[in-house]
Image 1 (cartoon, one colour):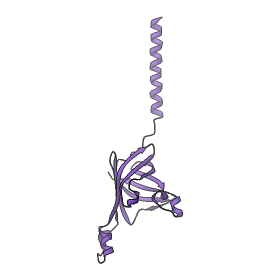
Image 2 (cartoon, rainbow, N blue to C red):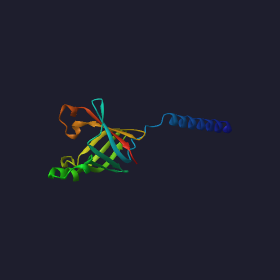
Image 3 (cartoon, rainbow, N blue to C red):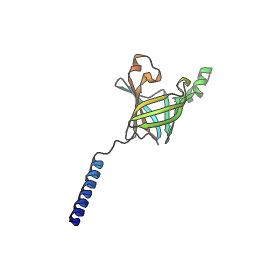
Length: 163
């Protein structure tokens, strides 16, 4: 009787293990948005319309816990440097940095440094989706202070992984 009970218990344990492993393989938990890397902004989507990102260049460097975002005017090396405004555009860069976290499909930045100081110390949340080497970073424009009609629309920044 003890041998039969032991055999049934063993068979049950093996069956339960196989069922559990099969269900975890066929239905894995959705991975968090994997943003670690170096990214270059390639386009923007707003109101269903995608436009190439032109007029400036942006990069975002994301490590395990921190990010840094930089922007420079495109073709600034071609400016004539005849006026103070030309010089400011030539040397001007903007950006921000701080810590970040990913919770499910939410990418949350804690702004330590930012081009507009009124945003420093604030938290900025966007939805996050990675497809291959493309990062879709979506938020309401009003979250960045846009009070126009467009500010009520969702903006999606589209980034390409370069490293």
